[in-house]
Length: 115
Length: 112
Image 1 (cartoon, chains in turn brown, red):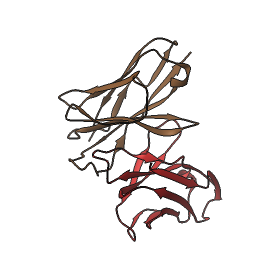
Image 2 (cartoon, rainbow over the protein chains, first blue to last red):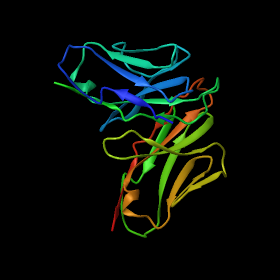
Image 3 (cartoon, each protein chain N blue to C red):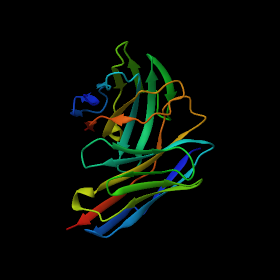
Image 4 (cartoon, each protein chain N blue to C red):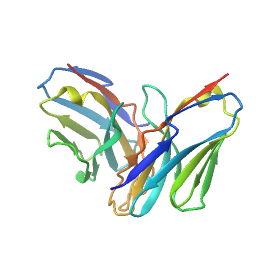
């Protein structure tokens, strides 16, 4: 069974630009969550999508947004990039019923560098 | 606010030298506690889920246990390939979805 895939794997952008990252979950998984990982802050939750609806949102500014398509694939967008947005962006999928208690499986991440 | 604290931050062991990693948590109501392993440059790899105090789970040289305030990841006779960062995360009952709150991790190095 294929795992979670993320594209692109590496990205270099300039301050002020915007970026879109893509995530394909494990087949049959309806929940997709996004996390930001930095050396100083660790893994921080951005948002979760389930059945094309945002179910949870972390404490990130509105520049961070996402969406989910009918095939459960998800994208996240960051507008007006700042140097502090440089991080590893991780996508995780789970089978997650309404109570969302199932384990999450992570993709390899997208390494974003903002210069 | 949910909080997860892991200790130690870093641990260096000799091959075969058993030890334990600690994960202390504060959550209004625990739905599940998760352990992950992360290798450099890769996404976290799922290891275990624990749901209630007293529960234990094992996989090869790893054993995870859970109390009402903390979880331990016991590593028995570790090998160099066990070197990685081990992450602990909690999911709160009040969360309608899959949101996880992570600790900072313990970086484990096993020397041959």
